[in-house]
Image 1: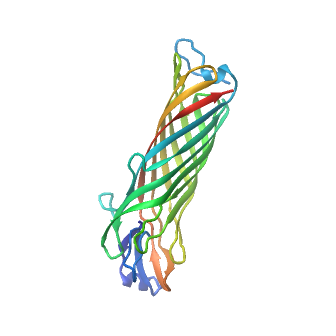
Image 2 (image 1 turned 90 degrees about the vertical axis):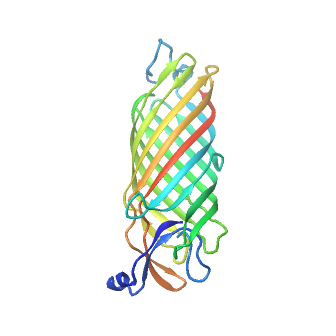
Image 3 (image 1 turned 90 degrees about the horizontal axis):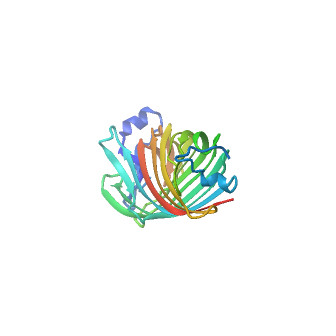
Length: 291
């Protein structure tokens, strides 16, 4: 699966002084002998109705379960050349989300686990299609906001384990980075319903990917940027309890790594991680407690 398996010429490797075969890595099963796979403030109000978030106190605890549809693609020289792809269908990747929110700050955590589908090829160009198990997505963040609506700053950590299949030579990859973000959140009240859309720009800090094969090389992913959109709707049943429904869109763009040395079965290789894009569509539901 993903490290971008484009075979570079041996001459390049010699020219670089490595004296080793130079390859790009793609995650997908390999031939068993020589190749490997993957590599409270005043809210905005309508009709004079006060926000449920400040009627009881200063805190709201939100608990949700949900599912995510993922589409991850690695590219060659252009985005028209897709080297490999990981994707999920509804129900493949499920999890839980927790948010604690006050008028001044919020803390969020989301953990999703399950399976994904992989399409790509081995190092020698053989097509591959497999089911990846053990996929894990985690996102934790803390934000500072001057009120329940308006601009906010956020700092977070994102982790993705790509999972493995039962194909010979398959291995896991771990993508991870810290990030900062700047966003804006609105607050709109319609009787007992509250709509709180938000939009956020994000920038990755020290993004890396670790490949669990051979000498387990770590790739510097270059630059990572993201966009996050949320559309949460709540229905207040009483001053303390509300039902929640939320859609979230998350986008990540990775520029890719430079040449990265690795040792596999005693042989020296130079690998790289190609550029990629990730599209994530989350749908979650649950309840909140105000206090």
